Image (cartoon, rainbow, N blue to C red; front, side, top):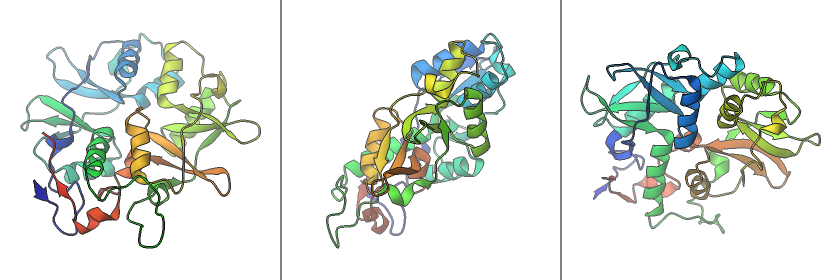
Length: 298
Protein backbone atom coordinates (compact mmCIF):
# COMPACT_ATOMS: atom_id res chain seq x y z
CA UNK A 1 0.00 0.00 0.00
CA UNK A 2 1.16 3.53 -0.60
CA UNK A 3 -0.36 6.88 0.21
CA UNK A 4 -0.83 9.61 -2.35
CA UNK A 5 1.50 12.54 -1.68
CA UNK A 6 -0.16 15.68 -0.40
CA UNK A 7 -1.53 17.93 -3.10
CA UNK A 8 -1.69 15.25 -5.79
CA UNK A 9 -4.50 13.20 -7.27
CA UNK A 10 -5.59 9.65 -6.77
CA UNK A 11 -3.79 8.52 -9.94
CA UNK A 12 -0.42 10.01 -8.94
CA UNK A 13 2.28 7.39 -8.59
CA UNK A 14 0.50 4.91 -10.84
CA UNK A 15 2.00 3.61 -14.08
CA UNK A 16 0.50 2.97 -17.48
CA UNK A 17 0.61 -0.79 -16.87
CA UNK A 18 -1.64 -0.35 -13.81
CA UNK A 19 -4.52 0.80 -16.00
CA UNK A 20 -3.92 -0.49 -19.53
CA UNK A 21 -5.80 -3.33 -21.20
CA UNK A 22 -3.57 -6.18 -22.32
CA UNK A 23 -5.93 -7.18 -25.12
CA UNK A 24 -5.00 -5.42 -28.37
CA UNK A 25 -7.36 -5.88 -31.32
CA UNK A 26 -5.60 -5.81 -34.67
CA UNK A 27 -6.66 -5.90 -38.30
CA UNK A 28 -4.68 -6.70 -41.45
CA UNK A 29 -4.11 -3.59 -43.55
CA UNK A 30 -5.82 -5.17 -46.58
CA UNK A 31 -8.92 -6.27 -44.64
CA UNK A 32 -12.10 -4.52 -45.85
CA UNK A 33 -13.92 -1.75 -44.03
CA UNK A 34 -16.87 -4.06 -43.42
CA UNK A 35 -14.69 -6.40 -41.39
CA UNK A 36 -13.30 -3.47 -39.38
CA UNK A 37 -16.84 -2.38 -38.48
CA UNK A 38 -17.80 -5.89 -37.46
CA UNK A 39 -14.80 -6.22 -35.16
CA UNK A 40 -15.33 -2.81 -33.55
CA UNK A 41 -18.98 -3.59 -32.84
CA UNK A 42 -18.34 -7.13 -31.59
CA UNK A 43 -15.63 -6.09 -29.13
CA UNK A 44 -17.10 -2.65 -28.26
CA UNK A 45 -13.94 -0.83 -29.34
CA UNK A 46 -13.20 2.68 -30.51
CA UNK A 47 -10.34 1.77 -32.86
CA UNK A 48 -8.30 -1.07 -34.32
CA UNK A 49 -4.53 -1.31 -34.70
CA UNK A 50 -3.69 -1.95 -38.35
CA UNK A 51 -0.77 -4.32 -39.01
CA UNK A 52 1.17 -5.30 -42.13
CA UNK A 53 2.17 -8.76 -43.33
CA UNK A 54 5.07 -8.79 -40.84
CA UNK A 55 2.65 -7.85 -38.02
CA UNK A 56 4.21 -4.40 -37.60
CA UNK A 57 1.84 -1.62 -36.54
CA UNK A 58 1.28 0.72 -39.49
CA UNK A 59 -1.77 2.73 -38.46
CA UNK A 60 -5.06 3.00 -36.62
CA UNK A 61 -8.60 2.87 -37.95
CA UNK A 62 -11.07 4.55 -35.60
CA UNK A 63 -14.82 4.97 -35.61
CA UNK A 64 -14.24 8.56 -36.77
CA UNK A 65 -12.35 7.28 -39.83
CA UNK A 66 -15.20 4.89 -40.64
CA UNK A 67 -17.83 7.61 -40.23
CA UNK A 68 -15.82 9.73 -42.69
CA UNK A 69 -15.73 6.78 -45.12
CA UNK A 70 -19.52 6.43 -44.77
CA UNK A 71 -20.00 10.12 -45.48
CA UNK A 72 -17.76 9.76 -48.56
CA UNK A 73 -19.86 6.81 -49.83
CA UNK A 74 -16.89 4.42 -49.92
CA UNK A 75 -17.89 0.79 -50.52
CA UNK A 76 -17.57 -1.63 -47.62
CA UNK A 77 -14.97 -3.68 -49.48
CA UNK A 78 -12.53 -0.75 -49.46
CA UNK A 79 -9.27 -1.91 -47.78
CA UNK A 80 -8.71 -0.63 -44.25
CA UNK A 81 -5.47 1.10 -45.25
CA UNK A 82 -7.50 3.33 -47.56
CA UNK A 83 -9.25 5.05 -44.65
CA UNK A 84 -6.63 5.04 -41.88
CA UNK A 85 -5.43 8.58 -41.25
CA UNK A 86 -3.78 8.11 -37.87
CA UNK A 87 -0.41 6.67 -36.91
CA UNK A 88 -0.42 4.72 -33.63
CA UNK A 89 0.83 6.84 -30.74
CA UNK A 90 3.05 4.81 -28.43
CA UNK A 91 3.96 4.98 -24.76
CA UNK A 92 5.90 2.70 -22.43
CA UNK A 93 4.17 0.52 -19.86
CA UNK A 94 6.37 1.92 -17.07
CA UNK A 95 5.63 5.58 -17.85
CA UNK A 96 3.63 7.59 -15.28
CA UNK A 97 -0.10 7.34 -15.91
CA UNK A 98 -0.55 11.09 -15.43
CA UNK A 99 2.03 11.78 -18.16
CA UNK A 100 0.25 9.44 -20.58
CA UNK A 101 -3.09 11.16 -19.88
CA UNK A 102 -1.47 14.53 -20.56
CA UNK A 103 -0.30 13.25 -23.95
CA UNK A 104 -3.79 12.02 -24.77
CA UNK A 105 -5.33 15.32 -23.73
CA UNK A 106 -2.84 17.48 -25.66
CA UNK A 107 -3.06 15.35 -28.80
CA UNK A 108 -6.86 15.11 -28.48
CA UNK A 109 -6.79 11.32 -28.83
CA UNK A 110 -8.60 8.64 -26.87
CA UNK A 111 -5.97 5.89 -26.68
CA UNK A 112 -2.27 5.12 -26.60
CA UNK A 113 -0.68 1.83 -27.63
CA UNK A 114 1.74 0.44 -25.09
CA UNK A 115 5.10 -1.28 -25.47
CA UNK A 116 7.16 -3.08 -22.84
CA UNK A 117 10.33 -1.50 -24.20
CA UNK A 118 11.17 1.16 -26.76
CA UNK A 119 10.86 -0.23 -30.26
CA UNK A 120 9.29 -3.44 -28.98
CA UNK A 121 5.94 -4.99 -29.91
CA UNK A 122 2.67 -3.55 -28.70
CA UNK A 123 1.61 -5.31 -25.49
CA UNK A 124 -1.41 -3.26 -24.48
CA UNK A 125 -3.63 -0.27 -25.07
CA UNK A 126 -4.52 2.59 -22.73
CA UNK A 127 -7.95 4.12 -23.31
CA UNK A 128 -10.09 6.51 -21.30
CA UNK A 129 -12.41 3.66 -20.38
CA UNK A 130 -9.50 1.76 -18.80
CA UNK A 131 -8.41 4.72 -16.69
CA UNK A 132 -11.92 5.63 -15.58
CA UNK A 133 -12.48 1.99 -14.64
CA UNK A 134 -9.37 2.09 -12.44
CA UNK A 135 -10.45 5.41 -10.93
CA UNK A 136 -13.89 3.98 -10.18
CA UNK A 137 -12.44 0.95 -8.39
CA UNK A 138 -10.15 3.10 -6.27
CA UNK A 139 -12.94 5.50 -5.33
CA UNK A 140 -15.40 2.71 -4.54
CA UNK A 141 -12.94 1.22 -2.05
CA UNK A 142 -12.31 4.56 -0.36
CA UNK A 143 -14.18 4.84 2.93
CA UNK A 144 -14.92 8.50 2.20
CA UNK A 145 -16.57 7.95 -1.19
CA UNK A 146 -20.34 8.32 -1.46
CA UNK A 147 -23.13 7.87 -4.00
CA UNK A 148 -25.66 10.12 -2.27
CA UNK A 149 -25.93 13.88 -2.91
CA UNK A 150 -24.78 16.21 -0.12
CA UNK A 151 -27.43 16.29 2.59
CA UNK A 152 -26.48 19.51 4.30
CA UNK A 153 -23.71 21.97 5.27
CA UNK A 154 -20.37 20.27 5.78
CA UNK A 155 -21.45 17.20 3.79
CA UNK A 156 -20.08 18.34 0.46
CA UNK A 157 -17.09 16.14 -0.35
CA UNK A 158 -18.76 14.35 -3.27
CA UNK A 159 -18.09 15.97 -6.64
CA UNK A 160 -21.23 16.33 -8.74
CA UNK A 161 -21.88 16.03 -12.45
CA UNK A 162 -22.38 19.81 -12.65
CA UNK A 163 -18.75 20.41 -11.64
CA UNK A 164 -17.20 18.32 -14.41
CA UNK A 165 -19.67 18.36 -17.32
CA UNK A 166 -19.17 20.15 -20.62
CA UNK A 167 -21.93 22.79 -20.91
CA UNK A 168 -24.10 22.98 -24.01
CA UNK A 169 -25.20 20.16 -26.27
CA UNK A 170 -25.20 19.37 -29.98
CA UNK A 171 -28.79 18.54 -30.92
CA UNK A 172 -30.21 17.37 -34.23
CA UNK A 173 -33.83 16.83 -35.21
CA UNK A 174 -35.10 13.32 -35.75
CA UNK A 175 -35.95 14.38 -39.31
CA UNK A 176 -32.38 15.51 -40.09
CA UNK A 177 -30.43 13.22 -42.41
CA UNK A 178 -27.49 11.16 -41.19
CA UNK A 179 -25.30 13.31 -43.42
CA UNK A 180 -26.43 16.42 -41.53
CA UNK A 181 -25.78 14.69 -38.20
CA UNK A 182 -22.27 13.72 -39.34
CA UNK A 183 -21.55 17.27 -40.44
CA UNK A 184 -22.60 18.56 -37.01
CA UNK A 185 -20.43 16.01 -35.21
CA UNK A 186 -17.43 16.82 -37.39
CA UNK A 187 -17.81 20.58 -36.93
CA UNK A 188 -18.02 20.25 -33.15
CA UNK A 189 -15.47 17.46 -32.76
CA UNK A 190 -18.15 15.40 -31.01
CA UNK A 191 -18.83 11.70 -30.68
CA UNK A 192 -22.63 11.76 -30.45
CA UNK A 193 -25.61 13.98 -31.16
CA UNK A 194 -28.74 14.34 -29.04
CA UNK A 195 -31.80 13.74 -31.20
CA UNK A 196 -34.90 15.81 -30.47
CA UNK A 197 -38.45 15.62 -31.77
CA UNK A 198 -40.58 18.43 -33.26
CA UNK A 199 -41.36 19.60 -29.72
CA UNK A 200 -37.66 19.91 -28.85
CA UNK A 201 -37.80 17.09 -26.32
CA UNK A 202 -35.00 14.48 -26.34
CA UNK A 203 -35.93 11.33 -28.24
CA UNK A 204 -32.61 9.51 -28.46
CA UNK A 205 -28.98 9.77 -29.50
CA UNK A 206 -26.98 9.05 -32.63
CA UNK A 207 -23.43 8.01 -31.80
CA UNK A 208 -20.58 7.00 -34.06
CA UNK A 209 -21.45 3.40 -33.22
CA UNK A 210 -24.98 3.97 -34.55
CA UNK A 211 -23.54 5.53 -37.69
CA UNK A 212 -21.11 2.72 -38.54
CA UNK A 213 -23.87 0.18 -37.91
CA UNK A 214 -26.03 2.04 -40.44
CA UNK A 215 -23.03 1.99 -42.82
CA UNK A 216 -22.65 -1.76 -42.39
CA UNK A 217 -26.36 -2.30 -43.05
CA UNK A 218 -26.14 -0.35 -46.31
CA UNK A 219 -28.37 2.55 -45.31
CA UNK A 220 -27.84 5.72 -47.39
CA UNK A 221 -26.69 8.83 -45.55
CA UNK A 222 -29.96 10.50 -46.59
CA UNK A 223 -32.07 8.48 -44.13
CA UNK A 224 -33.43 10.45 -41.14
CA UNK A 225 -31.62 10.30 -37.81
CA UNK A 226 -34.76 9.00 -36.09
CA UNK A 227 -34.42 5.75 -38.03
CA UNK A 228 -31.05 4.76 -36.55
CA UNK A 229 -30.94 6.56 -33.21
CA UNK A 230 -30.58 4.69 -29.93
CA UNK A 231 -33.42 5.45 -27.54
CA UNK A 232 -33.87 6.73 -24.98
CA UNK A 233 -30.94 9.08 -24.49
CA UNK A 234 -29.05 8.30 -21.29
CA UNK A 235 -29.65 11.23 -18.91
CA UNK A 236 -28.46 12.28 -15.47
CA UNK A 237 -29.22 15.31 -13.30
CA UNK A 238 -26.89 18.21 -12.53
CA UNK A 239 -26.64 17.29 -8.86
CA UNK A 240 -25.93 13.57 -9.34
CA UNK A 241 -22.72 12.45 -7.59
CA UNK A 242 -19.88 11.94 -10.06
CA UNK A 243 -19.18 8.43 -8.78
CA UNK A 244 -22.77 7.39 -9.48
CA UNK A 245 -22.57 8.85 -13.01
CA UNK A 246 -19.31 6.95 -13.66
CA UNK A 247 -21.02 3.76 -12.47
CA UNK A 248 -23.81 4.35 -15.00
CA UNK A 249 -21.28 4.78 -17.81
CA UNK A 250 -18.66 2.08 -17.35
CA UNK A 251 -20.87 -0.93 -16.62
CA UNK A 252 -23.32 -0.68 -19.55
CA UNK A 253 -20.44 0.65 -21.74
CA UNK A 254 -21.95 4.12 -22.18
CA UNK A 255 -19.36 6.81 -22.91
CA UNK A 256 -21.49 9.84 -22.12
CA UNK A 257 -24.57 11.01 -20.26
CA UNK A 258 -26.65 14.03 -21.23
CA UNK A 259 -27.14 16.32 -18.26
CA UNK A 260 -30.57 17.62 -17.30
CA UNK A 261 -31.38 20.66 -15.21
CA UNK A 262 -34.37 19.38 -13.22
CA UNK A 263 -35.52 22.91 -12.41
CA UNK A 264 -35.68 23.92 -16.07
CA UNK A 265 -36.57 20.41 -17.34
CA UNK A 266 -34.08 20.68 -20.20
CA UNK A 267 -30.72 19.25 -21.30
CA UNK A 268 -27.93 21.68 -20.48
CA UNK A 269 -24.73 19.71 -21.09
CA UNK A 270 -23.00 16.37 -21.40
CA UNK A 271 -20.62 14.47 -19.15
CA UNK A 272 -18.21 12.00 -20.76
CA UNK A 273 -15.38 9.76 -19.62
CA UNK A 274 -12.87 12.34 -20.82
CA UNK A 275 -14.60 15.00 -18.69
CA UNK A 276 -14.23 12.74 -15.66
CA UNK A 277 -10.49 12.40 -16.27
CA UNK A 278 -10.02 16.15 -16.17
CA UNK A 279 -10.64 15.67 -12.42
CA UNK A 280 -8.00 13.01 -11.85
CA UNK A 281 -8.11 13.62 -8.09
CA UNK A 282 -11.03 11.20 -7.92
CA UNK A 283 -14.75 11.53 -7.43
CA UNK A 284 -14.67 13.54 -4.21
CA UNK A 285 -12.55 16.16 -2.50
CA UNK A 286 -11.07 13.69 -0.04
CA UNK A 287 -8.44 12.74 -2.63
CA UNK A 288 -7.19 16.30 -2.84
CA UNK A 289 -6.14 16.09 0.78
CA UNK A 290 -4.45 12.70 0.22
CA UNK A 291 -6.67 10.99 2.76
CA UNK A 292 -7.02 7.71 0.90
CA UNK A 293 -4.60 4.89 0.22
CA UNK A 294 -3.89 3.58 -3.23
CA UNK A 295 -2.96 0.07 -4.19
CA UNK A 296 -2.07 -0.25 -7.89
CA UNK A 297 -4.01 -2.92 -9.73
CA UNK A 298 -1.88 -5.96 -10.59
